[in-house]
Amino acid sequence: MLNEYLSDEAFMRWILDRLEKGKLVASVVITRKSGSAPRGPGTKMFVDEDGNTIGTIGGGDFERKIIEEAKKALESRKPSEKKVALFRENLYEDVIATEQLCGGVVTVFIDILKPVQRLIIVGAGHVARPLAKLGKMLNFKVIVIDNFPEYANKEKIPEADEIYASKDIINELDRIKVGKNDFVVIVHGDGELEAEVLKKLFKEEVMPRYLGLLAGKGKLKYVLKSLTEGGISADIIKSRLISPIGLSVGSETPEEIAIAVMAEILKVDRGAQGTQENLVPTMLDELLGAKVTDKSE
Image 1 (cartoon, rainbow, N blue to C red):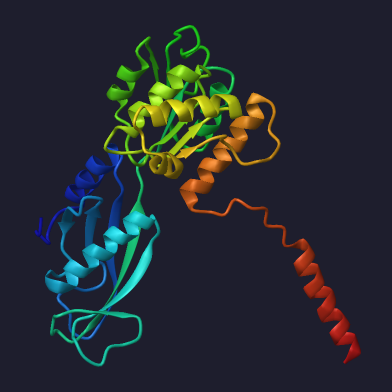
Image 2: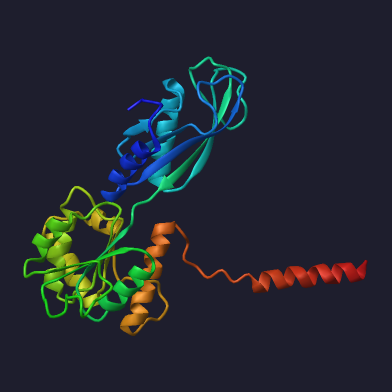
């Protein structure tokens, strides 16, 4: 869609449509222009995960290359700034070349717009309750699925945005339509049922961003055996499934387990290392070392 005179409302409707479907959107804005270029600072365009666009920043090879950069940013989920030369020769350092001949250099900032992320909890028992509470605190849309209505209800889990209580959990998963930006935590407790849930998820075209199973060694071995015997590739299982779940902090109670799991989810979401960053020893050594040097002088 190349109409450069779209209203802000048209932009917002297009963006909201994608975000409501759980898709990421890249915001592309020209921040600087040096020399001749089709469009100036403030010009905007938006790109979704499928490469669809609204608005234009000037068209041609320049726009095509920025759309590719926007798709890379969506994949990494990290904003970026790009300089683009609208000429072919005598390029500046760190500038993307194009086939255009306008002669200017344009700086573009690419930001990532995220939908409300969904935390899908399969199971409504002791661990699910604090998980739902923490998920809500961290601005996730919390969805709970279980086959026991006496556990999966608003009275037991008031923080849940949606609750699906049905004997047919697999059918409920079809209704929810797990997407690639979702976080799925399986804490049901019935190993046989959990294995079936995992088979269902692994056979879908789209896998969630995080897939974790609460399990000890015995249950995990049973589940993995069931998955491989069910035709799920060992390599795919290794690359997608996390179990046991949660950062290793010695968790014992349901609340402690929930905290460890949500910390692990944040680690995945932010692409962080998840390690303790205590700067006190290093910084003290540097400060004291500097003082010793000063006195000696």
